[in-house]
Image (tube, rainbow, N blue to C red):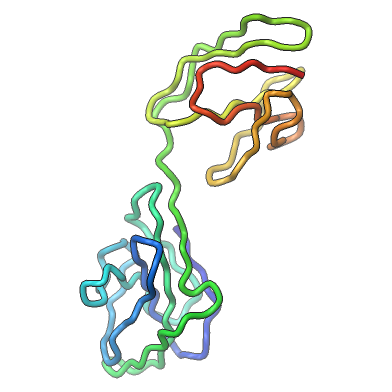
Length: 188
């Protein structure tokens, strides 16, 4: 996960991350926090669960070692550069602290064995064998050609079995289903 921020009035800033979605980081004055971009590897503020993932003068950091489908809370704390004599600004500001969820893991195998039945001039039933490792299905349909676009991770789509009424993710590529079902009745 990449975290970015606008620097405040300090000469440096320490960025802390918590697995959770409430509270704020309260670093202890006169304490130097060692940062590590691998979550839970940097210095923790006492036993609070807030870990230092960045300590410097920049405006972004990429965090690794996070768990999928979990909420994390991030807080950037400004301070003036004086090793061992830091005075941290811990008041909150717009979007600081801020929550961010990680994406769930991707399925390990794609759905297969598509079937088409009850085909008429205006509708058809589509079926398939579910892949593995996933909990849901997103079905894309394109008229007069193969689907030529992919959904984007972390994007919300609206599905509608009436072709052309769901989210169009690219020209002519429509989302017609977003459920864990294994069959779909597609209609005009």
